[in-house]
Image (cartoon, rainbow, N blue to C red; front, side, top):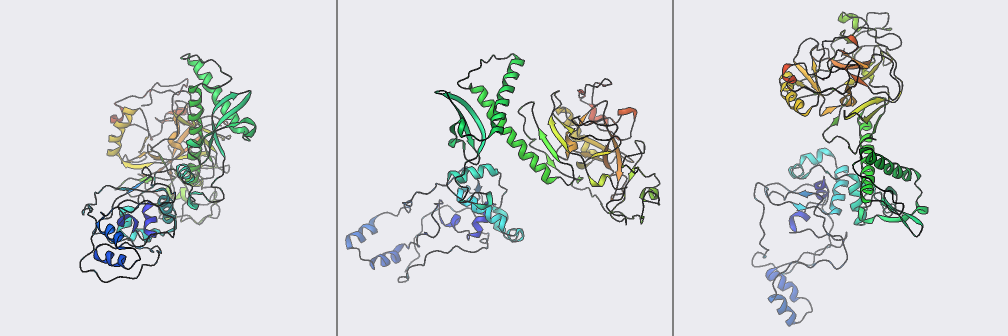
Length: 557
């Protein structure tokens, strides 16, 4: 990403200079000549012979730093490898520089150049740091330049790397260096804006209350103490006192340390907890926004954690449908479709497959567990309002991923009432072979986690692994008395080895109640052919069940 900005400027700055020096736009020095040509050019000036002799005898040194104040290069942002000599220069418009002076007499020998080590064909030379200004320009160029143009260049393929710096960090660096960049939302209008992001500390000085303020988009070094009357953020003030109260209650409940309330200042442990809680709240909100950007269904996704300081999972990627592993092909194209005008009364797709229509007019499932569901597909002539299109529309309810208080990690609860026998969500993940599932199952058992779902409706060739790739169902916990039931669904992919897994409610679920399903598919007295961790290799380490149900079996596997 940073390389794209260099390509837009011609790619010369990183090759010509041994170390980058930032200069204002339009003030680049002219080329310096060396050797006899340089001396002949200097002889045309109006300097005396003594200064010419001093110039000739003086050793060559690097050009001095510019006299104007300018931000120094940042060495901890990003790096780029040096250009390989065999690689052609990246195409792009060159920057406009001041006109060159009139050339002097041709030199009699090549101009002397400083001896520098050039990278070999392997391009293993030490990468150079990327200054803040070039980082912002790289972001801008990477967003504006077409992807095809960047992919055509060999140098672009070698230089363009994903930027791991968050948007907040980029904004903080830009404001610290007084730089503007529209790509990250920093303009001349809001460069000096100050908005309270969260409150860090509290003290009382001369009967006046002060709060240590973290300003949004500014580094921590710019935090300031502000009097209470200057703060117009009642929600942040309420969160500050709630976090303080929660910490004190946790300490008193654990009876590990006894903290005395100090009304003039906060103890360092309390202030540290409040800051960590504020940062966690920001990270969870950012993750929640990311989940809602990636989802393709109607229901909203919310995230909350009022139990501990755990943040978003680090190695989880939200997907909306199966992700096949290398070597597995998913043919999502139906071979036939119905021509019904009313799928309730005509011979529809389920009848063609030899099963009954799965839903009633209230969009509730009416078939017993273990019976497959055949919905209308892309070749059917019925429209999107067809009553036989339920699972393919996705989750219609707003759900919340929350941190459980019983040690089960993350869980999922509904924010609205769910009627019995209605579709709730689909279980998706990475489709792998059963042999790969055996290998991963041993690793997951040692960690005490369970994400493998065997697709054994007709055969046992494939397994769905939702450990790294999945949707909201990734966070649904197990219960020996669940409120969700699994059904096999076929829509566009009619391969009986690869059914889609849909979760339907078994009873009415109240708003705020946690959603669960039986990992052994024995809940509610129904025994289905679907199972999780069913093979002997996955049962080498038994995982203790913490569902707390009256009928709890004690183990997940």
